[in-house]
Length: 162
Ligand code: SAM
Image (cartoon, rainbow, N blue to C red; front, top):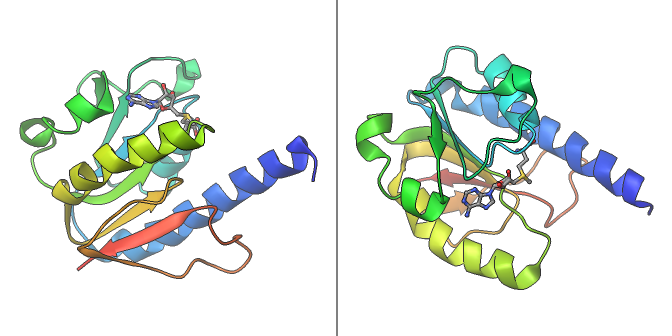
């Protein structure tokens, strides 16, 4: 498969899964956390399909398309290991949905990220809430849910908290 095909598949899977979670999360109140603003593509889609939600966005950089810059109250700058740990007072309540898009492409870095990220994601998700992650997370209080048809195994991970 060419890198172009792989890129298209990745983005198609991301869109399908975000729309799947948007339906599921309708019954769960609370904010959304977008971990990894990047270009702003998934943030832009989430704010379109979950337009009634407060969305807090985390990144160490601001490198997105100008139309996708979150307002100052909702853009949380810095290392997510630090900012996610201490964002509680700012986000006000645990999240209904956390989208984690922090994959680096390097397997060792990704394992390290998954290790510090998992307990923080658990801490900031409310019971009944959802987590969609490109990296596999170690979430003992969650069930991993089956993914919609057409998503290759291992590509994304969808979790629901007990
Ligand atoms: N979701 C984005 C989109 O659709 O355009 C792409 C996100 S990109 C794959 C990952 C982003 O996460 C990068 O912008 C990077 O700066 C940020 N990032 C990765 N690890 C981070 C960390 N430990 N702390 C803060 N930001 C991080």
